[in-house]
Length: 505
Picture 1: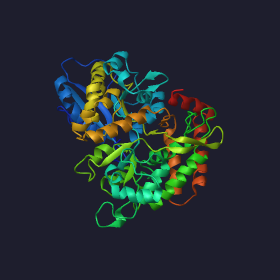
Picture 2: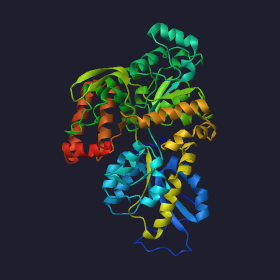
Picture 3: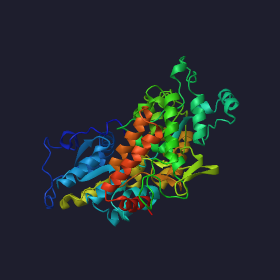
Picture 4: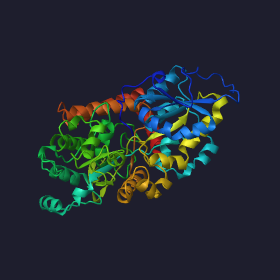
């Protein structure tokens, strides 16, 4: 997942066009009623996607475009604005692009608006769709039909300083205070351990820069209007997602929001404390990039996020290359049971890793000109076939693994362009695969109105982080807002039924 642009500011399509293969200075008119272009004319395919990811993709496909004589025009957008532009084009019955890259969270809105073509069987066969992990295939489908193809396997996983956890002197001091060993293999098993580690590593010079006030135990993505939604839910799932109950955000029977129950409140209460005590200054308003910079720059000892592995491996952006460890998100021995209205204790920690964001997907517009249908599907097939997918997830493109075959290819991650090294590659792939395959994993809220839910949650959490409201009061406001949004979307019961579709029930 990329974060270089604010998700609330975006380039207009005509202002952000990149081109290859001798594009004309002015963009041609939008496709019309479907007449095929003369066979000797070059086909032009228009693509709407992220600036950062799109530029990497354009570079990758250039040999294909040159070989097939295809012109490629790329519209560049901010992170969360692609969906807005797609929905605007549907509402106004106007053409935007032939191929979309969009966030899988928005699939209910985008597919429901009939903005996409269903993926033909022959394309599914060519891209070997069965090789894609089931949790990722869910992000491509709606009501049992496939409308998008995989490009990215976004999830959250824990990232920690393996080298420090393996240091005997550090471990001896830690164990004498907390009664258990630091684990360089696994990091924190539970959020209680995570908190102990955060406290221990704050305020002394473990990064050996001679400044004890630059050393902290955690860094999070907390900023409203950036990535707070994903930062908070990754912290809450272990407390609020019971393994015997498929629901997390909403009750699957009633549609009532759960976001103010004791599991969520405990998570937010602890998150506020952690950001106030053990995070770098300003940590309660950190964007995604800030949290990455804190750990890659040697200022924080642990975090959770998306592509920490690629940035940590960068010689230019990181001082911890080869020193990082990865695991699924910490769990909890206590989980709130929403159905019973009480906490339950587990002998072994219960984990509920968050499939945060779910990844970027690629789809074909329902307004594509019938005359270029074949080259459009050919290009999309090329981008998403197994060989291309492996090349993209093993380079600094922002794409994360999503195929079973990719997780088996440790060497491509260890010795390919990322040059992770075998130990880091194994840790990373193990953490990612276990997250994507976990039976209690939490699927992100991909349903109508999800952006409104996101904004309401971020507002409430921001109030708590700023000390403007106590966690319970803040989340009571969020719960009320969620239920009002559900009412506007057709009612709580209707949203419950759609939520079941999101969960694959």
